[in-house]
Amino acid sequence: MYKKILVPFDSSSQSHSAAQHALKLATVSKATVTLFHVIQEVHYSPEGIIKMRKGVDRDEVLNELKIKAQAMLDQLEANLKGSSVGSDIKIETAVVVGNPPREILKKAKIEGYDVIVMGSRGLGKIPGILMGSVSNKVCSGATCPVIVIHTT
Image (cartoon, rainbow, N blue to C red; front, side, top):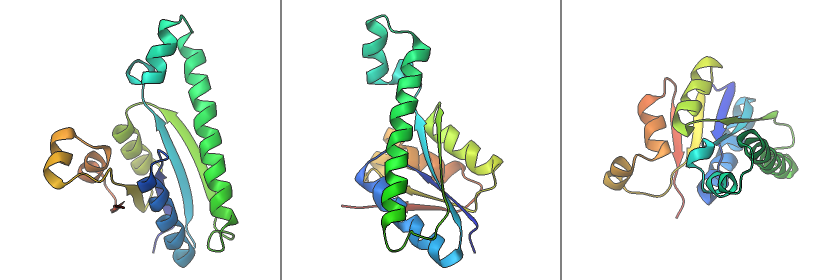
């Protein structure tokens, strides 16, 4: 059964559902859950572009985004541990900067995760391929099983 479960989280309803599903899996298998957020490189982030135009230092922008992302994951961790299912589950968090699919795949492979549980953006098969969604890229490149949670 699973020992390490990776949950890429972007605060979408799908990623919330994925976190809940991962918690249920972790309860059954006594696994550790890692909530993982990837901050898109600043030059691609709308927030980053606005702040860069105002003359704010790139490192300052990244630091601010990391703090916000960590606070988001800390809140999710508290909510999950506060649920009846999650009280005994070990939950870790991590925030990195980079290309989301690449960073998710790298973390899963290097740190030996048994499964990735992530949300879908709700796209059909053809639009997902054409738009190159994160979940599609992770499914295509993962060396471990990937569970994609789709909510309507």
